[in-house]
Image: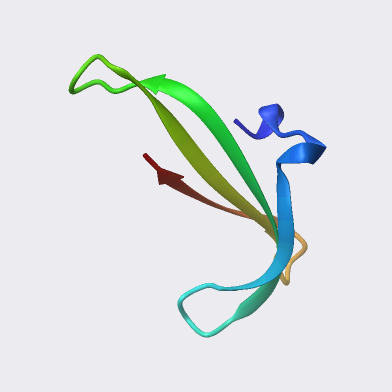
Length: 68
């Protein structure tokens, strides 16, 4: 999914909280795809939101959420 990202998928840069009070500067992206729903066999649009940040150790942090 990450390899599918294009510059036009970029939403904005924002502050994100990790749930433990720490904040990180993130770049947010959105990808929309048609996917087959296993329960019904029907094709539906699915939107994925991906947020990237660089952690204190320099490692890339990725958060993904899915909206059907």
